Length: 420
Image (cartoon, rainbow, N blue to C red):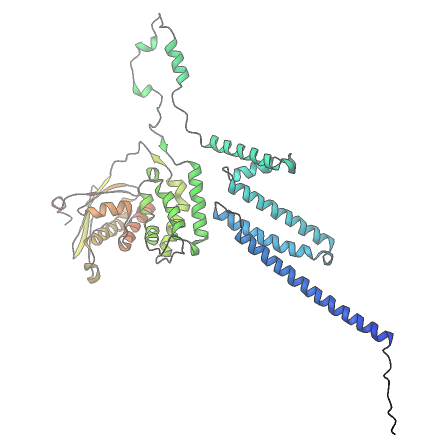
């Protein structure tokens, strides 16, 4: 009978058990840190998604863009603040101060967007620092009331030139028994005080409308590469609405923008501009000159000092002046120009002769006679055809640079024989 030997392995020591426990604990800590980081990241993503879906509705797009940018900055500052002990005390205080500033700015943006007084309400709100947090809503209402009141005062209409109360007092007075020596003097209209809308008076658009247009133009130029048809049409509409004051320039210097709006795919998609340079030049023109052209002199009249007659055929064009030593201009068409429309040739005749005579016409008012009725309209208001609008824009530029005032008038062909 064989004997079976059984070998017994030695029991684990207490140090081995402690090491195994520490390793297991470190592994659990590592996994918990990863799980906590994943949970925080997922929570941030859900919070951002919820804010986007249930966001604040803004009336003005500029306020919305600024608010959401500040919100992203605020999220980043909160992440930095969560590090806590890993940051030194001065850094923590700076981060906290920045968070408070961004929150205050976003609050101002929401007040300005929702209030009828806009940023005037914000200024009134920030100037009154007496109220505490419990009176904040009351403070906003009071600031809005003051802002609306100040806006109304700035846009108050011009007072009447006649004082009704004084007039009523004069009527109520008894008739004088002693003759008034003023009645015995001869009447002269030159001795009377100037009346409203006589010499030196003019009409202007309100400053508030001009500033609003300047803001719209600046925003359109800043976001030019992402400009939609609706945004561009809003800017053009504001310019056209001022035509009673700035007159035909409002239509002449918006035709390129009209062409782009008409070529839109939809109102809210980005415009695919075929002539972006011309559109940008139009917007820059209004941004630089809207304050200068914002006047209409109601008594303005300037007698024409030069008269010009021009005409064009399918072979050549010509023009001559009256009262300026009878200057004459003529030019032959090349083969490609002969194939163009008669309106283009008549417009080109005006442009080329104007350039030829520009030094003679400098600072003068001229009446230009042509036997093409389309030219009268295009020189004044532009054209939706690119080649004709280019000529109208060129004529306007020459007149602006040389200080020339041009008035184009149609005459029958029978009266234009000399230019013909």
